Length: 331
Ligand code: UT7
Image (cartoon, rainbow, N blue to C red):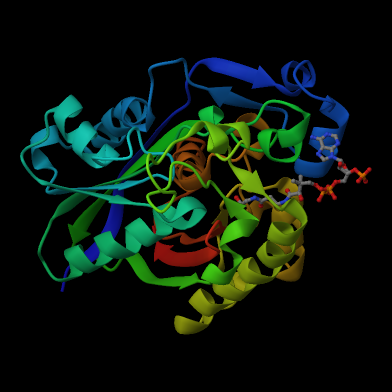
């Protein structure tokens, strides 16, 4: 059976940088408060007219280049985003057209912060069964247009940013690649981090003035509750991956956690007794880009020489749904 491994990575952040000081001009907040509570210094926002499928293009080109593959070598597209360009069709179809992929399958998945790992688990199955040889897996988000940039939204708006990451999942006969993936959900907490409108259950028409006046088009988060669950679920799902492979946290060369909040990452590190060099963080530059944080971090860590052949890598995510997931791989 072929093994699924990551043959190339890439990432892209739109050029516009939004600093904490800029946010402080829209709402009552400060650089000091944001850095102390989240570790974030700045994030990137797209310009009007750009969607996740647009910012996915440069990330995909880099990943293809790194893998030494052409557009025509890709057999399937998995596009993880919680902020699709349109309600329908999915961003995967848009990317297929914009980049001239063959008439291959394009699957959007909406599992928010866990999207990249859920996508990896789908790619893993297709590679192991021999169905596909090279799969493009994207995590791309435009969160900026779902932020309430007023005092009412300040607890959420300071966290999120836009960005895209891409990975090519390829088949190999070598003893490397994904060892296992683990996924969970708990829908009873859906309203702790959700975006209500547009909604098909909202009556006719789906979008109405009343909903807009109530700010239902903005992402809403109960930060404290999300934080409380995150610091439990991250270690739990990381341990699940380690135990499934008879490994311990000492075996981890690099943990790439979903970049939700630096304080969450630090608590996870402490609970797993990991050294600083075992944990990757870049949230200070990009904020939380939801499904894109892991592929961006993966590409950046690789480019910085922090991932080498044979390394044991763990990916872990927690977010809206709630959903949480982990993946473990030998690079
Ligand atoms: O991708 C996964 C999804 N998201 C997460 O993982 C995020 C998880 N949660 C968090 O990161 C944190 O809960 C936040 C950073 C969102 C908030 O930090 P916190 O330490 O939980 O603060 P808090 O919500 O308890 O608020 C503390 C105080 C409040 O004032 P009072 O009631 O104590 O007077 C807030 O009104 O800070 C106030 N506050 C702010 N002050 C300045 C809330 N947001 C801001 C702000 N600037 N942006």
